[in-house]
Length: 100
Image (tube, rainbow, N blue to C red):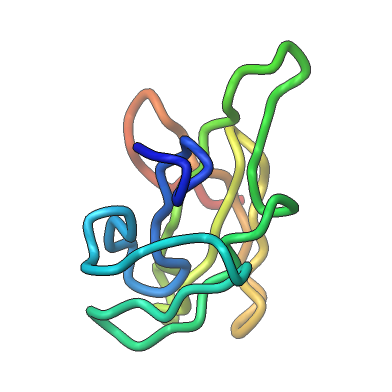
């Protein structure tokens, strides 16, 4: 990590690629286009996640089990697919989706 990545690990919102390892990656302009899939990612300060005690919040990028839409969820928050409407939650301990 360096000053160019705000000492954070950054992952593509679309394909989950580790952005920090991409050639030329920096957060200076507040966005970065993933060199793997071409997705324009928000890498601004407003997209850095902290918990209540200044600890990073766990973030999971998940794929809807019904329609394959890409979503993200924080810790054990519930998700609702924006495309097909199915819902449930992501369980970190079992690394699985639990549908309602």
